[in-house]
Amino acid sequence: MSVENRAKVVSLAHRIGTVLLTVLMNMNASAAGVRPHTV
Image (cartoon, rainbow, N blue to C red; front, side):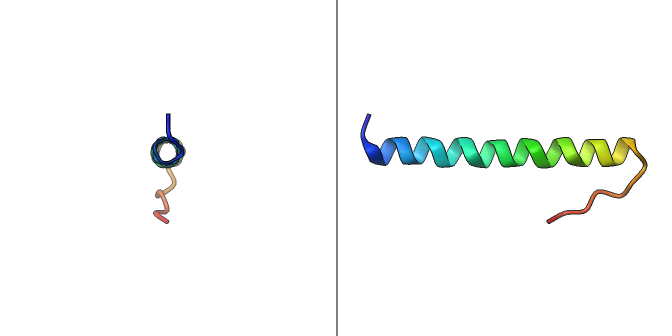
């Protein structure tokens, strides 16, 4: 696995993780009756 491919995979994983975290926080905020704050 080349360094370039590894960097691409890490970047993609980080992006997916960030999106999942944002969705999770928005769901928690909605469940709590608070309007989700988009960054």
